[in-house]
Length: 201
Ligand SMILES: Nc1ncnc2c1ncn2[C@@H]1O[C@H](COP(=O)(O)OP(=O)(O)OP(=O)(O)O)[C@@H](O)[C@H]1O
Ligand SMILES: O=C(O)C1=C[C@@H](O)[C@@H](O)[C@H](O)C1
Ligand SMILES: [Mg+2]
Image 1 (spheres, rainbow, N blue to C red):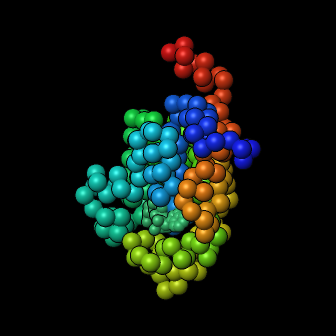
Image 2 (cartoon, protein in one colour):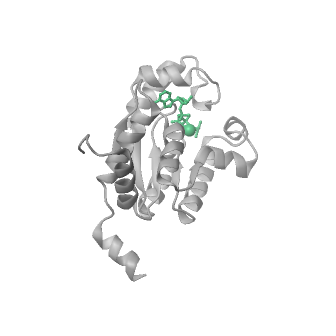
């Protein structure tokens, strides 16, 4: 999209293109799904929710505690249910946990509900610089977490790449990444068939 478009115009175009769809951020830990999702929701003026936070709220446990008490498969099942409920009660901007879109059931739910998906991509240096500051990611509690992150990139990037939109996170202001997201959303208008069905209903 042209650089001469004014910020307000990008927001208007993105809102119009999104229609009543949810905007769902996917990507690896530390990519910036929560950070960018939150400011995208503010810009679009629709509610924001982070699925990790919602899971912690309903379970009254931290992600670390859930993994330790019930294991990853139970966490994934809960994650699917929580995301499905959020999608049924939207529209919203939803920032998902790093593994959500990788899970076949969750990915199917996100697709079937017609959400527009954004992969926040990032290289290993960027991710590592961000995630190494905190120890709230159970999958990185390994002997060599940097290598684990690299392995997750190799396994998951082909699946994140199925998202409708890809934006590269990097050492740039969040507002710069946001603008790229909004421009990409503006270019992904709701298919006419869905718009018509919406008006008919
Ligand atoms: N463009 C950016 N520039 C600088 N810092 C950023 C940028 N995007 C995100 N961050 C910072 O990087 C850290 C990780 O971002 P965030 O929590 O949004 O990642 P996430 O993708 O939601 O990760 P997780 O899957 O673990 O929830 C945060 O401290 C956030 O403020
Ligand atoms: O990448 C992952 O599989 C995860 C990412 C986090 O957002 C949390 O959902 C949890 O730590 C698992
Ligand atoms: Mg997050």
